[in-house]
Image (cartoon, rainbow, N blue to C red; front, side, top):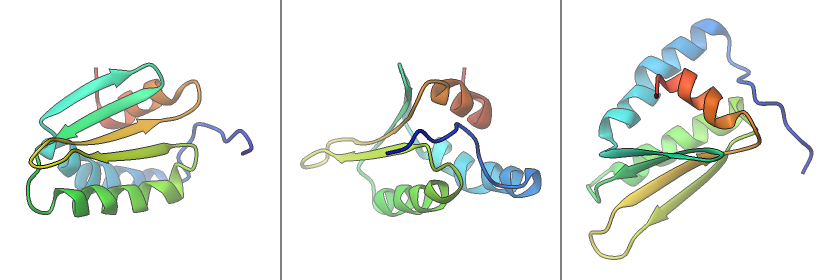
Length: 102
C-alpha cells in the first residue's frame, strides 16, 4: 500500500460537525482510552448497539482519513469491545488533536 498522508480531507465545517456529533458520541461511550505508539485504543463495554455505533464511525472516517487502520476486537461473552485507531508516524498526535485527547 502506498504511503498515505496523515490528513483529513473534510472541510473545516464538515470536520467540526463530525467531531461534535459522531466522534464525541463515540468517545463518551468509551469506558477507557489508551495511547498506543502509533495511535489510540478505545475500550467499550459489551452493550447493545455499541458495535453498530463503532461501525458507523469507522465507515465515515475511512473515507476522509484514508491513512487510518481500524481494528475492532469483540471479546467472547460479555468481554470488552476495542477499537484501535492506528497508522503511520504522526497518527497518534493527529488523533489527539482531533479528538482533544491528552
